Length: 70
Image (cartoon, rainbow, N blue to C red; front, side, top):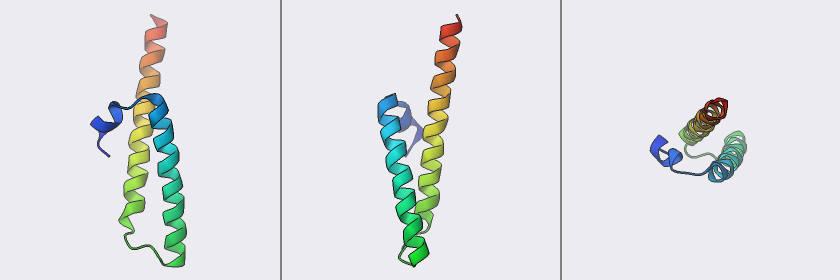
């Protein structure tokens, strides 16, 4: 998922996306333990997606806090 795609989403959509991505990471980890995971790089990609989403959420919170101070 590209950062530009993340910036276009609302906070509610970001919350939903985070939950979905974390659930998928959990499923893939279970598959890795049982030896059924075909593409191990999927876990890494999903972790990066979650990090991008969290970074955008933090930036939005900082921007909102800055706007409230003024």
